[in-house]
Image 1 (cartoon, one colour):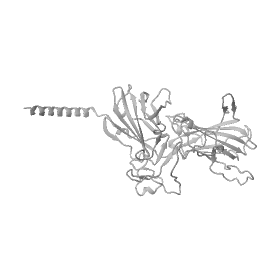
Image 2 (image 1 turned 120 degrees about the horizontal axis):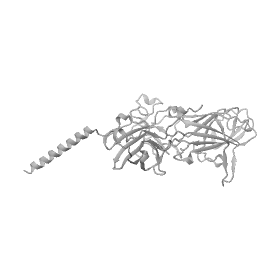
Image 3 (image 1 turned 60 degrees about the vertical axis):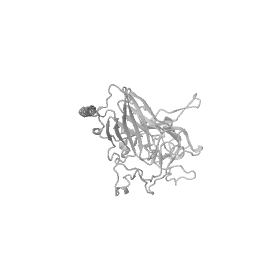
Image 4 (image 1 turned 45 degrees about the horizontal axis):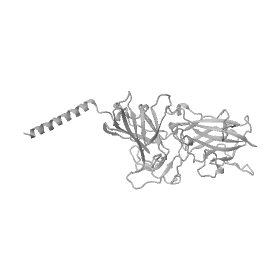
Length: 441
């Protein structure tokens, strides 16, 4: 399916995509050996466990004789072959990464992470995945090889659309000492872009607000991610079941992300465990932004990410858009990086955990939160009025979070209410002073 830029364009990461590079490294008797590499050029969107799934359709009657670093999920019908049986005979193979710990003879560089693919800004060393494929019944020259088509990436659900394969300049591969380069015999690229709309899933996070200058706490919107199920709805698979935070029962942990393992396996034949705490918004992730302190030249906000889900989030990240981030002085307890997609405009920041400290967001419960404070210098546009101190956009792990209704933001007390409060205070002080004077006589 061709990529629709209108549907997949991300204004916070306009150049973000996953590029698949297919390098033909050598010819064989009936085809070729290729190195397939996936590059995640997205700044903050990564692929978590259970990992990526790559698919395509062969142009002719190609088969896969063998693979290293990945495997086809289905062999297909290979009954016409005698002797050596291909690894996969399907016209539309589906390929997955191998799990960590497989024998070295089955590995290639940048493989075998269970399909987990890091984001470019957060972990560039983990943003590349590769595998080798031996293709048979294909062309054996640059003029006879036909490019596969209908590429798909699932993670594991939909959301990515891939354009057609395009021949590009052959890739170069440097030697270990960098003094010699070898060249691929043929190279083509496929570009895939993500759209949360095309993923056709409900939001996964919401945002709440509070401030030191207003007692009002603005909660997440009701039904921001889904609506709390009642007794009759709980049996419907599309409505997420939930459990009360006060219950002693806690479902098994499910981990996601780089290096994650799962201690619970949910299949279609097994009953589903309740997956998150019950709440009015039914969001697995809640982000709270609190305007904390006002200094003469600076102001401070506190950010808390709360996990209401039974799974751990490893390599989590948070993207926040705020007009004062061009004067962000320090982020405490989080790693911080500005995202400047449009030159000098610096209003978007990416945050993630510090390795071995808070880079894992633990499952719902007492330890299921991470928090930090950000210190910002006041600029010419600074004001606490009309909700200016609250972010314009918030994303968790690349998905847009639901913000409260702007009409409900904590605003500064009005001048009239401040005047009334001042008059009450003066009256009280005068009454107290008069009482003390009269007590002397």
